[in-house]
Every structure is written in C-alpha cells, then in structure tokens.
Amino acid sequence: MTEYEAWLELAPYALGREEKRRNMLARLQALTLHHQEHCTAYRHILAGLGITPGELKQLEDLPYLPVSLFKTLRLSSTPESEVVKTMTSSGTTGQAVSKIYLDKATAARQQKTLVKIVKDFTGAARLPMLILDTPSVMKDRNMFSARGAGILGFSLFGSERCWALDEEMNLDLEAVKAFTQRHAGKPILLFGFTFMVWQHFYQALAERGEKLDLSQGILIHGGGWKKLVSQAVSGKVFAQRLREVCGLEKIYDYYGMVEQTGCIYMQCEHGHLHASIYSDVIVRDPADLSVCPVGKPGIVQVLSLIPESYPGHSLLTEDEGVLLGEDDCACKRKGKYFRITGRLKHAEIRGCSDTYAAEH
Image (cartoon, rainbow, N blue to C red; front, side):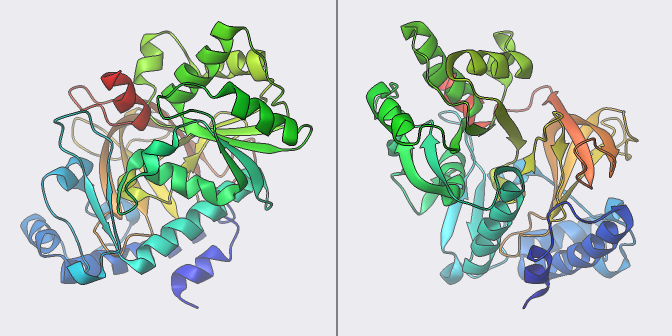
C-alpha cells in the first residue's frame, strides 16, 4: 500500500488541524521535490525563487504557481509516452486553455479521491443518476474538457444513467419523466453544472408549467455563478426555485478546477465549502500575498496531495474567497471551511457554467 492509498483508508474529514498539517506538509514537500526533479520548467521557477524544497517548514511556505501558467507553459513531470489523458480547462472561443497531463497513477488517484469525498455526502451505495447535460459533451475521450471530465468523474456514482438534455440542449422531458417514474420514492443522484441546471432544467420546467417529484433526489452542481449573479439568482434563490419545480431538498454546490481534479471542495448542509484531508486552502492578501486570517477576504490558494504527473499541487487561483473557520463547522466535519466570493477583476471567465453562458 502506498502512502496515498493509506490516506484513502481514512474518512475524508477525519483529521484535526495539527495532524492534517503534519501529514500534508510531508507529502507536499515530497511532491515539490519530485516536480523539481522531473519538470524542467518547474525546476527553473523554483531556482528563480531561490526555493529549496527540503527547507520548507510549513504549508504557507510552499511555492505556488499561478493557475493561468498552465495556459502558457507545458508543465508535465511525466514522460510523454506515459501520458494517458490530457485534460483541458473550460474556455470561450479563442481563449487559451489549461492543459493538464495525467499518467495512469495520477488519474487513478483523482478518481479514488473524488469517490471518497462525494460518498461522505451521498452515502456508499451507487444511485440512479440523472445527468443534467447532453451526451455530446463526452465525444472526445482522450482530450477532456473540464465539463466532460466532471460528468465522467461523477458518473462513477451512478448505477443507471439518464441524460436530461438532447443533442440540441433541449430538455428531454419524456426521458426524464420515464426515469423518475422508474425510481419513484427512491434516492436519485442528479449532477450538472450550475448555469446549465438553471437554464436547461429549471427554466425549461418552469416555462412548461411542469413539475417533477425529485423529493428523494440529491443534486450536486458546480461551476461558475457569474451569469446567475448577474440575473440576481443567489444560491438561496437557486435552491428555492428547484424545490418549487421538483421538490429537491438536498442540493450541494462544490468548488473545484481541472488543474486539481479529484480534490473538490463540497458544500455542506450549512452552506460552507470544506477542504478534505486530501486538500487545503490558504487565503492570501492581494496587496502583499501574506496569509489572511479567518474572516478576511483575499485570493484563494489551493493545495492538493494528488498530482504527480504535473506540478499542480500548490496553485494560486483567480478566485476571491474568505476562510470561515477550521474544525468547528456545525456539520461536524473537520478541516477548513470557506466561501468563494467572486473572481479577481480582469480574470478570464473560466467556470464551466460561465463559459457556456458566455457563448450562448
């Protein structure tokens, strides 16, 4: 059993602050050294910063790459012959996209970690799954977009899958009704990207005056909120309207990115995003990049224990957020919990939902 597999034996929110920090620091130091040895561009970056991985004493000292760097540099720590999948970020037409190179081991860790995190919210059993998207998004299995990768990853939790939208992005109401009738009164998992859930599922049902019984359903959704916020649709309104048309009560947002696939931050029942034992967040002051205390907004840095095939273990995002606390959320999950408050000014649109919305 590898060190990471041993971590996968633990509950995803089981470790308190000190034990988690100690374990994470050892793993992240090792990853920093690994990428220094195997990625030429990363080695040059560390040299330019004057950083020696073995001398890093705390998580806050770890060097971080701007997430946008994956759009301009080929950052890979694995031989090209061992790359089994190349994932790309969402991007509007003409916009540069991140390229993430995965070897077999990293891809497997991403999948296992995602399963471990999500099962803490959905339970161990696989559930009938309603995918609030179109099957056409899955056409290229080797060059995955963030949207396709998200659907594929969450499809692991589905015992039977039904696509809610046809190839033209129209709601296939007959297929959805047949699916819900087959599983009436039983738990169902729904997955989709935020704006698409709103536009192609909720609005399509509302415009037709249709109502479904999904009171036993669990909706997991993610992606950008930019377009919805501009339409004055808050998280509260989003959940309320879905309850009105289909009775959904369990609605979980999540925060994640293609550059750190697998290490998603799920939203708990109290509306807080949570870092698992496989990841962490640090909020930095935009003025000097110092670490912000609880309650002070800043730029979000994300840490992940997964990436070995590319140096994506410590990234400075283009998102603004605020740390709300650690180990004391009312949901009883340990670890840091936080809120994303928006995008940095002048940052490109990047959320799957936002990218789709910008093009339609």
